Image (cartoon, rainbow, N blue to C red):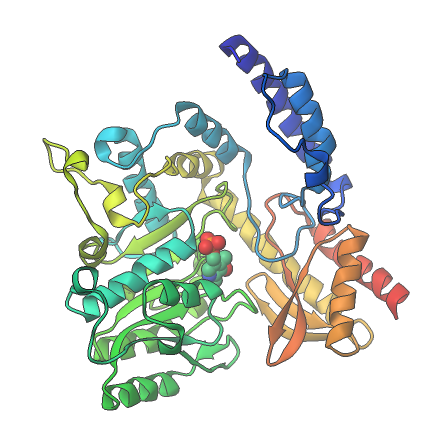
Amino acid sequence: MNWDEFSHWGQHISRWAANYHQTLAERPVRAQTAPGEISCQLEEAPPETGQPMEAIMADFERIVMPGMTHWQHPRFFAYFPANAAPPSMLAEMLVTTIAAQCMLWQTSPAATEVEGVMVDWLRQALGLPGGMTGVIQDSASSATLSAVLTMRERATGFTGNRDGLNTKGALRIYCSDQVHSSIDRACWVAGIGENNLVKLPANGPTFAIDAIALEAAIQADITAGHIPAGIIAITGGTGVGACDDLNAVADIARKYDLYTHLDAAWAGSAMICPEFRDALWSGADRYDSIVFNPHKWLGAQFDCAIQFLKDAKPQLDTLKIEPEYLKTTGADVTNYSEWTIPLGRRFRALKIWFLLRSYGLEGLRTRIRNHVAWAQELAELIGAMDGFEITTGPILSLFSFRCPGDDDTQQRLVDALNEDGRIYLTQGMFDGRKIIRFQVGQFDTTRDDVLMAATVIREVWGKLS
Ligand SMILES: *Cc1c(COP(=O)(O)O)cnc(C)c1O
C-alpha cells in the first residue's frame, strides 16, 4: 500500500467510524453469533498474493462486523464500560501512526514526559496528595501483579528475585472476598500461592472487609510462623461494587508494617467528583500503590491503567533491570520500562492529554454524575416491579437485582434479555445467590437509554414468565 492509498482509506475509515457511532443504537448490543460462525468464513490458508483494500474492507463489513459486541453502544450495561471518547480515539490514531516504542526516555522523550505530567494531572483529579508518582500500564491486572511482586520482594528483604522463594514461612497477602480475580492470579504468578491469599468476609452497606477479622488473621499467621507481606483493598469491586474502609485497612497495615495496594480499577474514575470521596475514598492517600483504569469509565480508549505509587523505589527495586543494550548516557531521566513487567510500551499518555483537554474535568464529571443518578432512578423502577428485588443497592452506578424465581430463572432472564438485543447485561454471584448486575457508564448513554432498560426487562420477563 502506498501513502496516497493510505490517505484515501484513512479518510474512508474515519467517515466509517463516525457513521458507526451515529447509527450504533440501532444495532443489537451483543453479537448474535453462534460459535464458529465467523471463523468458517475465513480462508483456511494465508493468501500468496496481495489483495485490494476494497475486498479486505468489504469482507470486514460482511464477516467481522456481525460478530462484534458493541461496547460503545449506549445501552451496554454489562461488566464495566470500556469507553473510547472521540478525542482519545484520535490520539490513538496519531500514536499508531508514529508507532514509537517508548520503553526509555531516549526512545521518545515526549512520551515519557507527557506520561509523567498526565499521571500527575490524574493524581490531582482524584484528590491524591502531591509527592505520589506513578506509571501507565496496560491493565489493572499488570499493576496489581507489580504491586504483589513488590510485596513479595519487600517481605523477603529483596531476595526473592535472586534466590527464588525459599522463605521459612509462607508469605501471606490479605484482602476481602470481594476482590477481582486478577488478585488471585497475581498471587499465583508471583509464587505466593492461592492458599496464601487470605480472603476475609465483607459486610456492611458497602461490603467492606471485616477489619477485626483482618487483624485477627494477621496475628494468627504471625503466631503460626507465616510472613504477612501485604494487604489489597478495593474501592468498587467487580461483583457488587464493594468498597473497603480504607482508613481501617491502612491503620492495620501501618501497625504490622505491610505494603498496601488499592484496586480502584472501575470506581477510581468517579473520584474526579469530590462528592463521592468522603464515603468511598477517604484514606486512599495512605496506600503505597493504587490502580485505576481510565479505559473503563473515564473515556480513554482501551488500554490504559494508571498505577499511582507513594514511593516508586520498592517497585523499582523489584522490577528494574538494566542490561548493557538498554543503558543510556547523559542526564538523569525516567525510564518507565523499569517500573513495569513488560519492556516495550505504547505511548498511552497522549490519549489522556487529548481527553482531559477536550472535555475538561467538568465535562467528564457531568457524565459520571448523570450515570450515578440514572442508575439510582432505574434501580427504583426495577425495585417497584412485581416480585423483583434489588439485591444490592447502587454503589456509584452499579446495582444488582433478581427477578422472581430460582437461580436458573435469573440466568434465563439474562440470556433472554441479551438475545432480545436492545440492552446487554450480565449475571454475578452474591451471598451464594445468582444476581443480575446492572451498571451505567457508557460515554454517550442518555437517561432515556437507561430508563428504557426497565421497559425491556418488563417486556422480556412478561414473555418468559
Ligand atoms: C476491571 C477490573 C479489574 C481488571 O482490570 P484489567 O485492566 O482488565 O486487568 C481489576 N479489578 C477491578 C475492581 C476491576 O473492575
